[in-house]
Image (tube, rainbow, N blue to C red):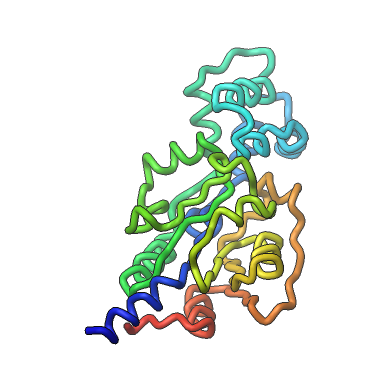
Length: 245
């Protein structure tokens, strides 16, 4: 009995963190840009993308610096400054930024929890996106344990790769972070001693925040690249994760 309890404690000291967009949920910013261009009739996809990124409104919303109402109003003006759009119209347009859940990754998250590990969600996300996605796909944010970390940038007031958001995660001896952005993993590995796995199959290179945060390559031993679910599982095992427990 004592050995079993010691083993439980050992597993509970390991945290496996999942990014949301590109890891648990497909992103589709090109469809968002295309949808706006079709509605605007005065802007091309590239024109809108440039204006949207330059406005900085998504970055402010990701940090929780502006309320949803202001984000929606500013987005309205960019989309069609001469014609009124309803809140619902803009919300529906904004939802084109993402697609369906990545079901195999959600199953992996649950499998890791069932194997005795703590799983968490660590995401740059706006309040509006969190509310809309959680309403339709709550399984994406599930950690199966109310005490497990669910770290959302708009609540913290800080985004990856800023150190402040990483500092909110404490109390674990071993942290493995799965993300689709090298720069975010680089900070986790070099500044906080985590292990990192770059998950590439669903990376959306058109994501607005990527134009602000350029990728950097890590050469650390605690860094791996996974181009499939199989390779991801293999890298987790290399980092000491036991699926057959």
